[in-house]
Image (cartoon, rainbow, N blue to C red; front, side, top):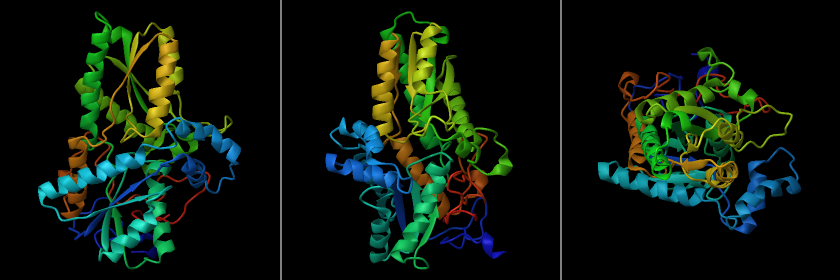
Length: 389
């Protein structure tokens, strides 16, 4: 096979780029990779500089975002949530008798990925399977993590010493989907309690919310040969999962996919509609209540707490609409168990036909396809866990 089709830093089972591996791999550690967040007021600006590195954004503009964190004492909830998730994974692994230590490293704040990899190697680990705290396909939710792994190998000098594979994107894994089904069921029940006699099919909407991304990046999400269209795999995956959730829990209520947390300049097209615009429009159409489902998020981090629990709730109150926000997976036992299942399917070489997937889009690829999830601004940079470029 041509050299350009050898996957960097991969196990023997993955290094030639199969869509799904079916050979067991003796992993000796798990790497939990996440975004990171500040843990005090003095951390906020340095953290935001890390997030926006290379873009030349002045501190004055960063302060416009910093107030979200400062409203919570400068502490992002994400690090605490990752500590809880790490502990929950360790507990589930122990319950199943799986001897795999969990190392945690962030993209943008301490503990950083570099330190996690160095500690793993110091502990004698050499073959790592990574889990990113992001379920969908896009640049920021998949490819950028794979770039982070490649950069960390370069910066630590561990290239050639450490194998890093990555579990597949798990947007439609049963463990990820189940908490949202429960959330919608309970959310609709709460609406009925708060609005006795409400007509669910006419006066209520379910809004599945996810992080907006530039339209150009959305178009490039997922492999081009799948032909997903303007919203790419990113939008297609969300819509497919939302459809499954509503089939199981929706009780005939209409639903929409909405977006939040836009951060680009007004001249740059991003995915729409914004959740706040959708709430205002629905109020004008006679909708009395909305159930907001944070479908794009694995935990209640800042985008959920500020953009949904603060801004969206304020918008709903202003237009006289009752809004109920359902939980993220967090450390739901089904979600935690599902993450362990994803590790074990790679460890054991489980054939693709035996892997669970709740939509027709999955099970997603073990090794990302060539050209998958390009950043329209940055182009292709070195990655692991995927074919080049």
